[in-house]
Amino acid sequence: MNKQELVQKLGDIEWEDFEVKEAKSEVPKNSWETVSAFSNTAGGWLVFGVKKEGKEYTIFGVSNPEKVEQDFIGVLRNGQKFNKKLEVKCKKYNFDNKTVLAFYIPVAESKPVFYDNPKNTFIRTGSGDQRATQEEVNSLFRDSAFGTKDKEVTKLKINDLNKESIKRYRTYLQNIKPEHQYNTLSDEEFLTKIRVLENNHITLAGLLVFGDEDSVGKYFPDFKIDYLEIFGTSYADAEKRYEFRMSDYPNLYEYFFAIYERLIKKIDIPFKLNGAFRDENQPQVKAIREALVNLLIHSDYFSPMKPRIRVFSNRIEFFNPGALPKPYEELQKGDISLPRNPLITRIFRVIDLAENAGYGFDKMFKGWRAHYSKDPLVSMGLDYYKIEFFFDAEIPTTVDGEGKTTQKTTQKTTQKIIDEIRKNPQITRKELAGIIGITEDGIKFSINHLKEKGLLKRIGPDKGGSWEVLRRK
Image (cartoon, rainbow, N blue to C red):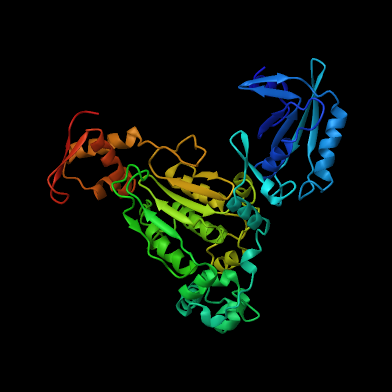
C-alpha cells in the first residue's frame, strides 16, 4: 500500500503533514524528534503502526494500542521530558483487524519545543525532521517573546535621538492632523505619549524609529534596511548584480520616506483626478505603502538577517526577518492584531501609516489586485516571511524549498512590444511603457528577453537609434 492509498483510507484526517512509525509494541524513541519538529513548524499527524520502505507503506498495526497511546500521551503531558506540556489529538483506525494510531501534533503557541535539552530542538523540512541550528533556536526563543522586545528600555536619553527626524515626524502629524492633541506638547511630553520615552529613557522602539546613527549602533551594530533595484527577474539574468542600492539612513522613519519615494516610481499610477487634483493615492500605491510599513514594524531586528526590499523587472519583493505569528491566511482576514513590534506599530499608527489591526494583508491583496489583477505571493520559513508583488510577468504556481521562484515574460506583452516597434522603430521605452501599461523596468526586461531570443536588435545609440524586428514571432 502506498502513501496515497493510506491517506485515502484515512480520509477524515486533514493531512497538514505526515510521518509514520512502525511502533508495534512501544513508542519509538525517534518519535520525540517528530513531536518537536511538528510543534515548532506547522503541526502534523504522527501515525503508529505503519512502516515506510521507499515509497511503499505497509500496515503492521500496534499490538497493544491502549498502552502505546497512554505512554505516548503521558510523556507529552507530564512536563518532564519536554520543556512544555503538549496536548495532542488521537484517532484509531482498523485495517484488516490491525489497529493504527494517528496523533495530531499542533503547532505550539510558544516555541521552541524540545526534549531533554535545547539541543534537541527539531524543525520539519520537506518530509523529514532536522535538528535546528543555533540561530534557528535563537529565532524561536525571540519569537517566544513576540510583541515584547521593542518595549524594553535602554540606558539612552532624549539627547541620543535624531532631532531632525523628530521634527519631521511632528511636522507630518501637524499637516495631516492639525487639531491633534499631541501637537501642543513639548518634545519630551510628546515622545513620552507615544512611548518613545519611558521614565526619561528611550525604548528600543523609540531608538529604532528616531535614533541617530551612533545611538542605534550601540544596540543594533549592523542596523540596515537593504533596498536594491535589479534589472532582471533574478541576479542570474541581470547585467549587473544591482543597478541601485540605497545608502544607509540612521533610523526607520528616515528609511520609510527614502524607500517609499523610490517604490512609487516603480509601479503604474494611471492619471486620475480626485476632485481638482491628480489622485496618486490609488489602491496599488496603498498596497505597496502597506507592504513597506509592514516590513518596518514587523521585522525581527535582532536577527542576523536584514529586512530587504528588492525591485526586479517583474516584481517587488519584501523580505521580513522573523516568522509570522499565525498562518497568513488567518492574518489576511484583517481582524487579528499581533504585531511583533507593538510600540513601533503605534508610532506609525499615530500618523496613519499603520493598520489599526492586523498585518494589512487584506489591504495589500485588494489594492494590488485592483490594478494588476493578481494577488501578491506570500512564502515563509521558520524565521522569515516574504511578500512578492508581480507586475506583468506570470506569477509562478510553485515555490521551491528555498523560497525561490521562476517566472516567464507573458507572450501577450512581448507580442505587444513587437507590434508597437513595427509601427514605430524609433519608439522609446518610456513610450512603450505608457502604451502597454507596465513599468519601464518591465519594458527593459521584456526587450532584453526578445534580444536574447534573437527577435530584436538595436541599431545605433540609445538616443537617436531605432529597433529592428529580426523575424516574425
